[in-house]
Amino acid sequence: MTEPTQPVRQTAMPQGVGLNWCAYHEALSATTVQVWDGGGHVVRACFSCREAYDLTPASGPASAS
Ligand SMILES: [Zn+2]
Image (cartoon, rainbow, N blue to C red; front, top):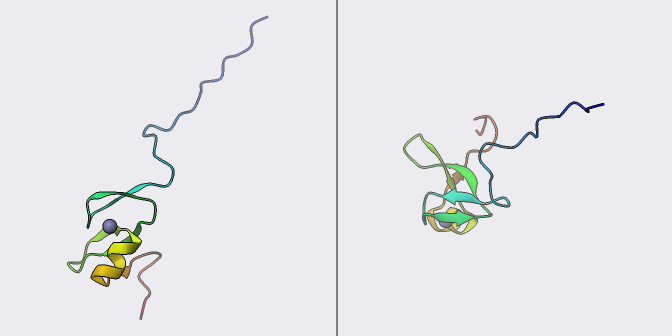
């Protein structure tokens, strides 16, 4: 009896533990959120850069009024 082999599902791109690229200081950070870059684009910025550049978080639907 052979057991059916289940294909091991792996994520194509293994990510670090919550690390994302901060587009402002150009390094990985664990505190990044999506923000508006001022030119209508959404980029990721860490907490420090959000404070430094006074960035507006772009999380969720654009319903900020
Ligand atoms: Zn940063």
